[in-house]
Length: 143
Image 1 (cartoon, rainbow, N blue to C red):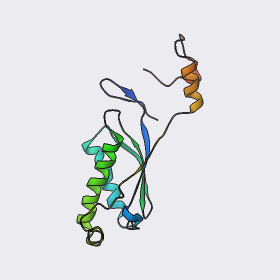
Image 2 (image 1 turned 90 degrees about the vertical axis):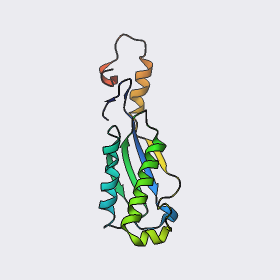
Image 3 (image 1 turned 90 degrees about the horizontal axis):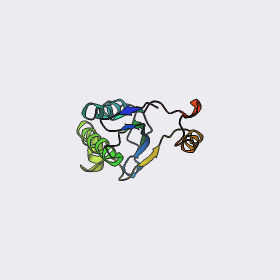
Image 4 (image 1 turned 135 degrees about the vertical axis):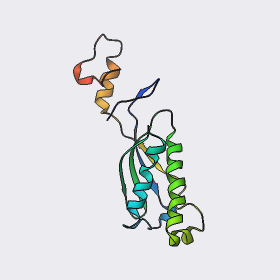
């Protein structure tokens, strides 16, 4: 994982997000997927500290591996992705617009999981707090 920096923070925050379609309807067809991917990646233009590292879809859900800085809530990023993609997809595809009657195309909830470092490495790092130097195998990079 990359170490990122803001003016007052250094972080490694990666998440695995899954967003399901409303009623688990299978409208994410092959011809829609490129448009959806393109639109979701546009979030990086508006929020340059948010980075989509991987994105894949099935017919009724989307998986993202995404880097989100600590000054932006995960829920806010999910809201932006779902709200804006829903609006654009309903504009472009009339049958989806009819299917959802101008409502969101996404289910209300989402799944979120952190993509963490090795637990053993973290345990050793915590054990060595307060010591002059960390063993090389425990080092996380520069502070």
